[in-house]
Image (cartoon, rainbow, N blue to C red; front, side):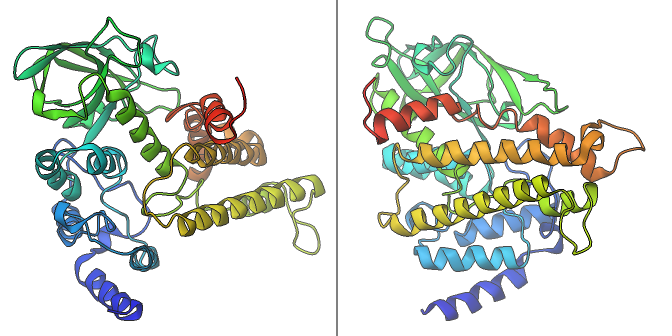
Length: 394
């Protein structure tokens, strides 16, 4: 089938299956068993999953669409053309799914992939701990061999979405008597079991996207050990590369918006004013807005080039840190600049004196404080680039 014929097929299918409720601005369509979801949106989620287009380039054997890169680009273009909200964001499709494709056994893939593809299972990440953040290999949560299961005790922190998760992928210590990188295993565990306690962390932006997670004799099945016992560090690092690929805009859906839809130029014209020719009145502000727009466009073109040059179709290795570092910094700086342009109106929390866009800018400013931390801090990314990409000495 040629690309134009495929495009017609995509348009026709989307016209039939994508409801109006799934188009236009709005929250991400819920996934998993805990968040409530409208029946119409659930039908859309399942339709896209059953078609294989929630993970369009994954192999058909595991629920994917088996699309080529060019076909996936057509699909993404047509989804954007109708302003469709994708129903399968999150750690299932962007992190643990790709990792299972590389490291999982056939039985593990067949058991876990359907829930990921359909969005019926929501996942969270059990990595960071108190005292083991950037130095992740210092983690202390223990998993003890109890026959058919590992018994897990310890604590994880900054567990994104744990309160809505059905399953967790976690790094646990299975041998405390070897060098710290060598005694770690990568396991999957059911969050709906005795021994798992979750405490959301309320952030300054007003939301609670992160949680503390406590394990008190929780269990992970032995057949949910991914990779080799005590060799989970390599699996965990590869998963982080998949995570950073999405954060750097190199995931299946392409680059994500770097901020609100209203451009900084529009914000500057409104709050700073325009001159007689319709340009931003202040020359310095005009130059900063132009420079930011150029940097954003250059980054998007670099993302596009990286996708086109990656003929293997696999997530790149350490070089992905370049995209994570720059994308996170650009996102943070854009939110900073937006509030600066709004002046005092960009620092409101509530009240009739502030427009919705102004309140959103305040929250975006606060939320993006975390962008340069999660998935590995900017400092960690610079170290990876220096050592693993550029080969610089310690």
